[in-house]
Amino acid sequence: MKSTKITYYATTGIITAMMIFIAFETLTKPEVKVSMAHLGFPDYFRIELGITKLIGAVFIWLPVRLLKESAYIGFAIMFASASLAHFVVGDPASKVIAGLVFLAILIVSYVSNTKIQKAK
Image (cartoon, rainbow, N blue to C red):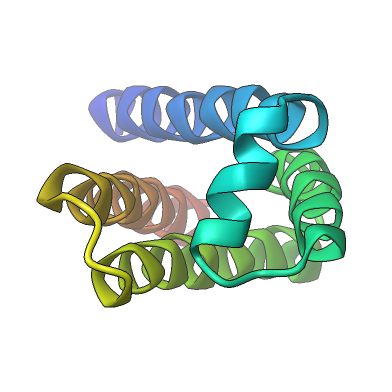
């Protein structure tokens, strides 16, 4: 059980740190505005994504199952959609794979969280 908790905290911490970092970049860096336009998204969607990432970074730690599950679902959709968007516009494989790597980390976090909850 101890290794499951370590895995949960490590993977959830990675996702949270990444979401907070990227949220601030999304909301403040002009390069992200250009990148979002390259992917075909309007600028208001960039703002929505930035705010949603911050909310999800909080929700994923809350003990309220509905909020935690919503964060997991939202992040999973976000990572998969990011990979797909980069693939569709022909971006380098590294950009496509990055979303899939974070999706894998998110899945490990979710599975370890589920094991912890079942053990309670």
